[in-house]
Image 1 (tube, one colour):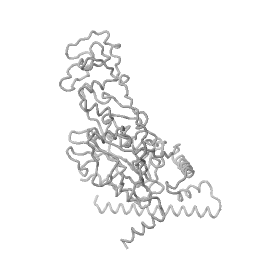
Image 2 (cartoon, rainbow over the protein chains, first blue to last red; image 1 turned 120 degrees about the horizontal axis):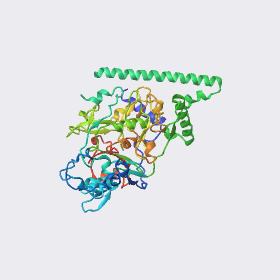
Image 3 (tube, chains in turn brown, yellow; image 1 turned 120 degrees about the vertical axis):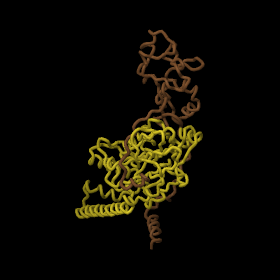
Image 4 (cartoon, helix red, strand yellow; image 1 turned 90 degrees about the vertical axis):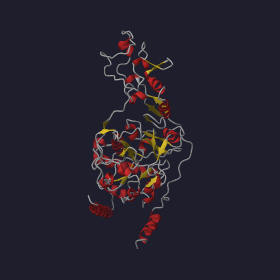
Length: 181
Length: 310
C-alpha cells in the first residue's frame, strides 16, 4: 500500500497535469544581447571642498615641507601603507585640483582610479572587468561604476566596522534548523 | 524545543490547514449553489469561481492573463487601497541569468535582506527574508556551524559572511519534488512558482539543499504604505497564505534590464549579476578569472549562483 501510494499519485498527476516533465526546459542558446555600457560615476561633485584652488589654495603659497597640519585638514589621518607619508605624493602641490601620477602627468579627481592603479594593479584590472567594486544600474543597457575612492578612504583605507541590520524573526519551525547548536 | 514538540506543531499546522481548506471549499460550494439557484452570477461571486478554476500559468492565454491581472489588481485595491500594476515580463532570448558573490568583500550587514523584502513584498509579520546571511568561522566552509542571528558591529576579525538565497539550479531538486508542477525553471534559468497552482505541500522546501524556499504559514502582512506597486505575476505580487515563495532574481526588474534589488543595496559591491551567455558580463568575467566556489556542489544541483574569492 505504502509503495503503491506515490505511483498512484504520479499516474494521477501525469494524467491531470501534462505540463512537461520535471526536468528544466531547454535553455535559450541564441546570440546574447549586447553587454552593458559602463560609465564611471564622477567623483568631483561629491567632494565637498572642491574646487580646492578656487576655495583656498590659489591664495596660499604651496608649502611642500612635511609637517603636522594644525589649522586645516586636521581630520585627515594619513595611514596608507608605509610610503605615502605626505600630500604631494598623490596631490600636485601647485595645482591641488589635480592628482599626480608617478610619471608627473596630472589627472582629475574623476580619474582618481588611475592613481590607485599604479600600485594596486591587480585590483585595478579586476575593477575594469567589474569583478571588484560597485556597479549598479543595468546589466544590459547603461551601468554606473563607482571609482575606488567612492568606497575606500584614500588617506586611511583600513576597513571600518559598522552595525549590521537586525536578524529577522524567522519563519515558524525554522529556528531549530538555523541555530545548529 | 524538542523534536517531538516541533513535530506536534507541524501536525497542528497541517490539520489547521486542512480545516481551512475544507472551510473555504464549503464557502465556495455555497457560492456556487447560490449562483446556480439564481442562475445569475454577480460580479462579486465571479472572483472565487475564476480563482478556483484558474488554469496553470503555462496554459493561460494572453486574454486569460489580462483578466487575472486585472482581478488581482482590483483585489489589492479593495484590501489595501493601493493601486498596483501586475506585469508578466517574458524571458529574453540569449539570456541566462547568473549571480556571483564575493566572499572576501561581503561584510554581513544584511542590507540585501531588507532591500529584498522591500522589493518583493515579503511578509513583515511573520518576518520573511529570502536571503539568509551566514556568519562563518574564518578557515572553515562548514555551514552547519554558521550563525544567522549575529548582531552588532560587522565584519568581525574572526568571521567571514556568506549570504545564501535561491541558487536557481539547473537540476533543481525543488522542481523535481513538486507533485503538481507548480514550480519550474524558465528558459532564462529562473525557477518560479505559480502561487495559484501551489498546494502548499512543502516538498520543495524539504528538497532544497540551500534552505532557500519560504512558506507562508500565516497570512502575509505588508503595510499598505510599504507595498511595492511594480509587481510581477511570477515574482513579487502579494501572496496568499499557504503557498511557497522564493527568490526570483527580481525577474520583474531583471527581465527589464535592471539589476536585482539586493545588488543595488549592497554597499560593498560583493554582488555581481548578469547574463551568463555574454562573454563580457561581470559574472562571466568572475567565472573565467577568479577562484569560484559552488555551495553544496556535491548535491549535484548545478546552480547558477557562484561564490568567489577576491
